Amino acid sequence: MVSLERAAFVGMRVGAPRFLRKACSSRLVNLAIAALVTVEVSVIVHWDLQFNIHSSSTFYHLLFPNRYHDEHNRRSTSVYHIYSVDEALEVLRFAVQRFYALPGSSVDLYQITGPARMHLTLWDTPPALTDAGKLQWSPVLLPTETYVVEEREPLGPFTNSTQDLFHRLVEMDLELHLVSIAQEAEDFKSFEWEVHLVWDFAHRGGRVDMYLATAALPVHVGQPGEHAAPSHGGDLGTVVWLLLCVLCMASLTSCLAMRRGLGWALRRTLGAVAGEAELPSQAWKPTEASHFTGRRDTQFAGDCRQIEEEAGCDTVPFYLQWPFHRAVRDVAILAFLLLDASQGSHTTGRRGLVSTRRALHWQVQYQEQHRQPGFENWLVWLEVRKGIHLVRLLGGVAVFWAWLCVNESPARSLLSRMMVQAIPPVVSFLITSLPLFLGFASLGVVLFSEHAPAKFGTLGNAAVTLFSLLNGDVLMETMLDIEAAGALISRGYVCAFICVFVFMVLNATLCLIQDSFRIVKAHQVCASN
Image (cartoon, rainbow, N blue to C red; front, top):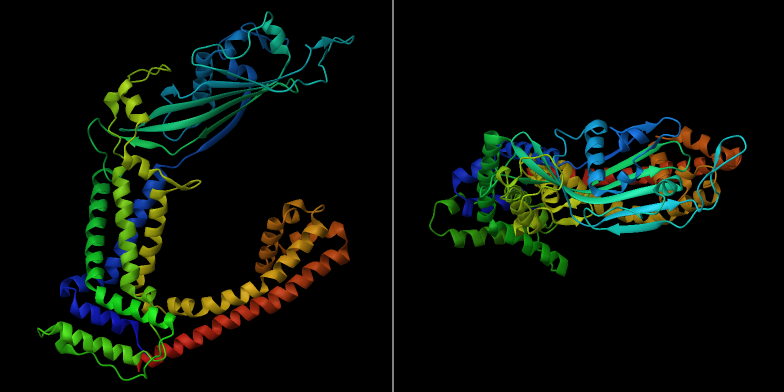
């Protein structure tokens, strides 16, 4: 049986310089790359952490912090002020500073990016006094009306009796789309906000729910005409960034120098897919003179033929070659580092900001550059999937492959070989048992959805619950939740599922994995002999 180390050895002997292959083959170097890229990705994720805020506060504290209130009915004498954009921003600022703990700073500057909207739900008639002296509201609700206004225009309808409109309110949702700038230490962040200020008057309790949610991740900005540092840790971050670049470039160069070994592995894999006949196995001994003589190409071809003749019982797929894994790791890390460096390429900084805390004062320079970001910034924050941006996706791939390559070679790892050997039969067996699992999940939805909607309300919830039962996590809790459907039915269902999937399917899967381990272990012993 051919060994993956031998194939990689041929490529190393032919292409890569000795000092480079020794350095890149060191487990300490791979460990250093994995540790550094983990630190870099962790810093980026922590720095760009988006946040959603929700809180509740009293009606008069949030709306009218500095005005006189009628203690009898908690109504302000200046009700019309809540329909002003400027007033809403002042309320928002007060609420953020008093009731919300933003990470590291407060919101400093605002810019409304679109027309404000106000959604009103009203009673059809104003409240009336009953004989007992209490207010009684109409049971009829009017359809919710939405009012769209431009900046600095009044929000909401002005009637002859604003107080009458106020007393008819059931719910008011003030929707604002803002862009804000916040300062943290020596850096600035730009946030896009979708703000909902919801005043709930349905129970006349005077409660206000305020929702603040960022619509996008923050964009870092530096000084005008100056690119931001490649890392967010100052000089130390720059050293880490440069060291990662050097190590990955050296490792990638070493992997590319072994392209002949990779090409051989790829040809062998394609040949196996095409169903080519394999040659009988022979003994293999590396030719030491292949590195010192001038006939490297001729000797390399002979070594490749000798390896191909030995590959009678086992074909080496290219995805098991350790240069392939290192190349994937290096490309992912370099792409992540380049995007990390370009995310600070917004050139607007402190000089582009007005040194005032008043709302709606915005520097034209920042406004123009913010509305027309560069291609590199668009690429950084490109949303591959909802909530997953390109820079984070590359960072995750880089971290995963960096730690995968710490073992120096996936081919030398018994776990890696066992996984490759076990995955096809295990997946095939699990696909075969999937209809039975869906049958149990569907039966659980039919029998127990009314009694335990959190666990069996939908097919997905039922599948998650049954998977938890396989691990033995929520066994007693699940049986107690569905016991209302009948002790015989609930216990019979759970016991039948455990007997079929835990005692049979799960144990059969473990047997397949054990067989794969024995095969890989036997191959490893044969290769060592």
